Image 1 (cartoon, rainbow, N blue to C red):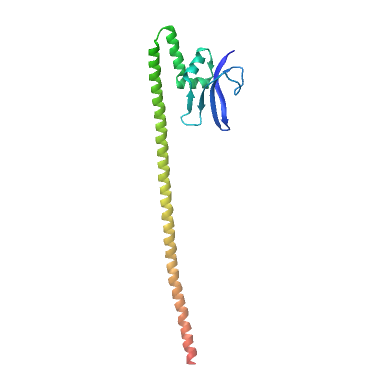
Image 2 (cartoon, helix red, strand yellow; image 1 turned 180 degrees about the horizontal axis):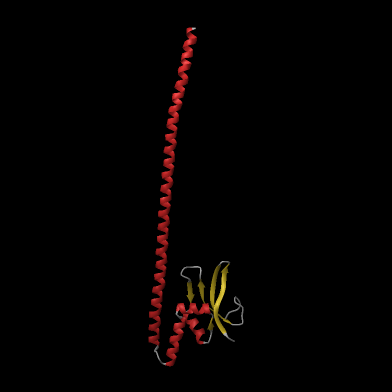
Length: 186
């Protein structure tokens, strides 16, 4: 029986979530598996990967072949490096302490890179938010200036019209007053 380390899809439509499993190569993609090794969530940025390193290395020692994506995940989490270092221990090229030290330094460096990426994403998100807020403030200022200008134009347009109406009313009242004078004289 050949064993593969592969991804088993879970989650819902357009929101995939994967289990990293060791399964018989003949079983279906989402079918029966031998052991769940970890999880992989590509929906987050950076992708969230939980992996039982010892279990993954045990399956690699037993001859399990990872698929391409599973191989990338195992490499990202250091399982392939640990498997490689264990091979060096078996051959006598390294001691267990040296292998553990190399793995620990590699894991620290990898954690630093991941933290730097998260920090960069956070800064970029904050910068985008500030830029959008500034653009929104500019749009609001333009809108308020246009509203004030329109109100001033309306007042300016209404003021001459009121003066013209007053002049027309006075002009109409003056002849009416003369007619009244003429009718009272007669």
